[in-house]
Structure formats: structure tokens, C-alpha cells
Length: 228
Image 1 (tube, rainbow, N blue to C red):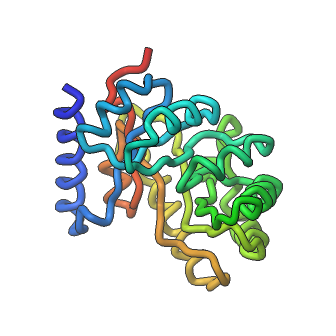
Image 2 (image 1 turned 90 degrees about the vertical axis):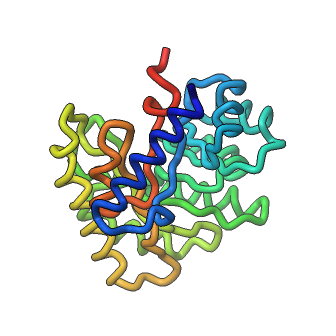
């Protein structure tokens, strides 16, 4: 069942890419494995999941350790507390949710301790919802310039979570806004800051996100089913 779900999601990605004239290879699937037991995550890996997305540090530490024999990539997609930075740099290949300079500085410090350059995305609160993490769009360039001075952090792009809608089309303007912001940030030419990645789109709206430029889609329910 899990293998069929994963294949169905990959087909949806391919169709979305075909619709907007993109190469499916330019979109990577992050299988959101938060709250799923290690055995179920391992089943997803066996079925072909290559990137796992986790929201909680302690849970991710346990799973990454239990599944260390598998050559998969771990991405952090939840709100990251500064005091958990030292664990995050040891586990994750990409952190999607850097939204403040204090966190970036701590990640930089902890990455330096283990001799790592930590790839990150800057999370933007594109909708302005108070309940969501992320930096305001108009503050993004300022944060990027500050982070660019950190030697052990490498910004690869932006991430966002639009408001929840039952209709995916309603999320389109938010995805479009993040894409436009990323292009403006790319034009600034800030040294050491890349804008190759756009993390946006989840189970209910990832096709629309792909049409608007997503390179990473974070899909959990469509792969693992409803969470308990």
C-alpha cells in the first residue's frame, strides 16, 4: 500500500511538471515522516523514498540512528529552537526553517564545531499569519545579507507555508509570491547566497506549487495516510 501511495505521488509530480513544461527531475519529493514509527519510515525508504522530512529533533535523532544503514537524506521542516541547533547540524542535510539571525548564528557556531557547512533555507511568512513562523517578505534581504557573513551556513533558497485551503488554487498566489521574492533575492547577488531551492507545497496543493516553481514538495498524508 505504501509503495502504491508513493508511486501515485510521483505520478502526480510528473503530471504537474508535464503540465507546466518542467523536467520532473527538477522537483524532489520530501516524504514527511514526522510521528511515523521507524518501521513505517523504513518501509517508505524500501519503497523508494530518498528524502525524509522531520519536525521534531528528538524523534528525528531516534529515527536517523535506527535507520542509519540506509543512504537517505534527512530534512528538518519544523520550527527549530535555538537550543536544538547542535543536534540539527548533526542530523540534517538541509534545514528548511531558518527564520531569524539568532538561530542562523547558533547553527553556524555548531556547524563550525563539527567542521560542517550547513545548507539551509530561509522560511518566509508569505501570508503574514501570526500563527506561522517565518520572516516577513520585506525583511528577507536583510536576513540574507546578515546570514551571508556566516562561514558555516549556506543558504540554498526559500521555504513557505501558505494558509490552509480546501481548494489548492487558493494557495497559488502565495506560491507565486515566494517565487517572485526568490527571483528578486537572486538579482541582489548576495555573495554566498543561492536561490536554487523553493520548498513549498504539501499533500493537498503540491501540484499548484510545482506549477509556480517549487523544487522541494513536502508530502506526508498522501504517502503515509492520515496521522493518528
